[in-house]
Length: 115
Image 1 (cartoon, rainbow, N blue to C red):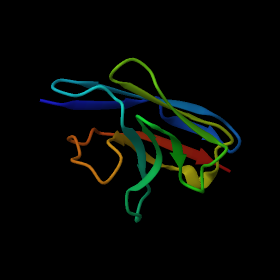
Image 2 (image 1 turned 180 degrees about the vertical axis):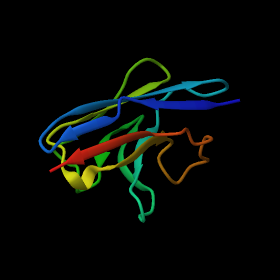
Image 3 (image 1 turned 120 degrees about the horizontal axis):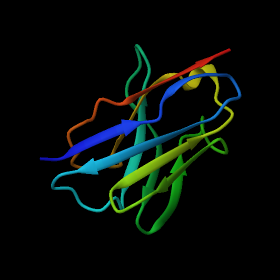
Image 4 (image 1 turned 60 degrees about the vertical axis):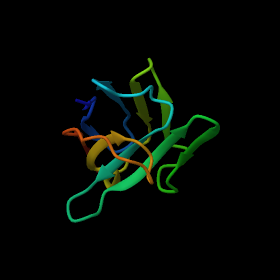
């Protein structure tokens, strides 16, 4: 059974920073190809950043130059978020970068940015 657990969210003011973490457990491969997604109320879940084995990291235009995705241990993933904006407010999730066979989704971690 695979489990993804996201953490590190919180409430910050605009311009602040947060570092999100994702840890995988169970029958899960190494985090060679992983991504961060976010879902704001009323919006679809969107891919924010992806890291792939043989490619440089990729980012949604809305977060380029502000967010940095990185791997930790074999089954951990991070997202450094700087210069946060109110529009970054969402629940953040980790999973494989689409298109892929998604792992079961974790509960996510809430990020709230106030102006």
